[in-house]
Image (cartoon, rainbow, N blue to C red; front, side):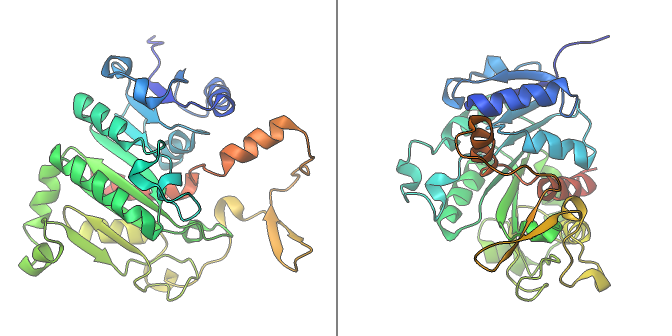
Length: 308
């Protein structure tokens, strides 16, 4: 029996790193090692021999999403949801001058190791568009096909908006260029770099028009297959193209009426937060930046269907 760990997890926060170890011990994510160094200190040699590489692993959102999507543990994949603060409206607005802008380290590692596919997630604010542009340019310069789509957590049944941009870079660029060759010339010229803008893809999120232009993405490859796959997993087939209920993981939530007159969902049996309990505070701090597992899994499933 091969007991070699299949996954490499990089997470600098001690609380989140221990949480990852607990998930590994419980068998909820792929077996692996947890490295608490800065991603800037990671070398290509550190990543050799691993099927999965998770940079900024956090609470294990991406590896857990892989399990939900049915991604085999031994199927090669990288994930890298870089810190959003430099490009978030809630941040200081330093963008590329922020010390938390760590994409260059990820880009260098990817260039050295050439993973099969990389997935990531970023703030969908206007401020983050320059970051997405940079990632796309960098990955396409390495010969990867690139795709990105923004959609809210409400699109997968969550009781909140939290719109995020999910992106991927695939080394099998030829399959997307082959699909692109069947697109109209106007579609290719519209984006200027042989990419196709996908607008109007819908989610049953109940925000504005469910099939309007609020859901927007880009992909340096074919159009129809990607559109159909994402729409199907987001619940946008014919009669499903309407605002949906709170469902799925959030379907059993308890709703509490708060003093400000608003109802808020909580996990059944959730214990109240008590001031001064450090274990709870650390978990909540890390949860604020966590990937939505079910939104990420939806994105993964769409990719898995068109990348067979």
